[in-house]
Image (cartoon, rainbow, N blue to C red; front, side, top):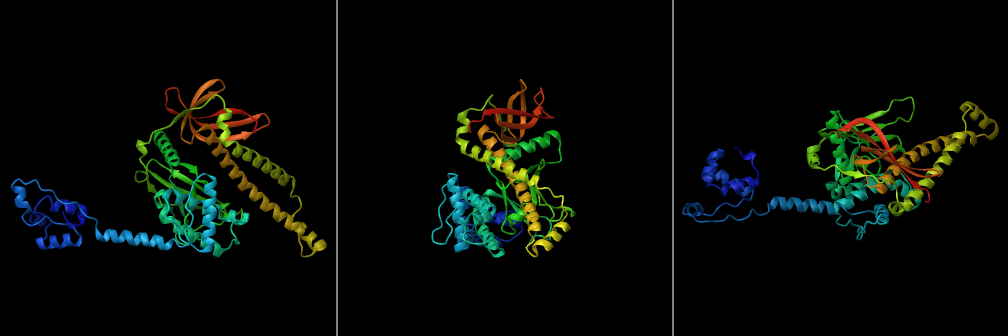
Length: 451
């Protein structure tokens, strides 16, 4: 045994288990060196005559190991650093207040800023605030909740606020750092922060079981703005985020993130980014997590829909507006070449360029519609999971064309039609012997459209 092979606690146990002369001989050091080591590590030694009393049959007790002064000082310095970093500027206080307002709408009570300092935040609350600020900062400015214009300096202020929240939120977050340097980011590339909630852990555990049962290399699941954010090292602007798709990759023993950034020019290939891998055994107890099995009802009742009635109505209205705008965009054909439009602009309007401006506006509308479709798809899945009370990875049973099926859920959605609302649960079907097969199946449930 050498000095480097044991901790302060192990040294404390040794010196109260045997005389120091025996321990020093075993370690290959002198009694004086051992005494100095105990003094440096603040490990109390038995008093003079202690071992003689032990040999005489005395039932002596050793004192508890007191707190290590250096450890106390380190924690005090760390706490002071967090508190000092918690001082917010006027602009950062606006973003913090906007995030608090959003959480209060969801029924979460958060302490406001006292003066210009962050309160002592619970890790779960800090993680939610961090995600809201990173994902909705630009939207708050558009809505007028923040009295500022989006710029590089404002983006830096938001990044600084996220950095101040990060020490509080760290116990709730997984950080995936990029393995290589990227030309479009600073530092070593973006670090993806994933909030490790209980539902996400259940989803990961179900996917790990699927990988192991089918002997797959790995499976992937999309990361939405509700699940992840970018760290303070590099935050994407909302415009850049439209070109970035991220997936969480899960193998039998590891987890990591892969991102694809579409190029601004269509002829350029996409840029792919992979993060470092984290060992699952260091994150969560995969082998001890139970699998949920949920029987689906034969029909959806008004009672199960009632708590989500407003959200479902908003989703239906958003789909109708999106469909109307998509139809209008498709109706605007592009048969006229750009050169012809540019010539018409010069002849009739000079420098105003109304024809080209209209075409540029159409391109922006199409990009916005693509993002809108993505958000609608995420909301369809979230509403369906909330009303049905299921999640990805759950095992559900239901009826498909009069026969009973049992599937492992891979996706959920809700759609509206003139006849009613349809809930769709897709998944991998189990065989008759109870093992998971390869065929996909879908369970559909209907609800009268009185929303």
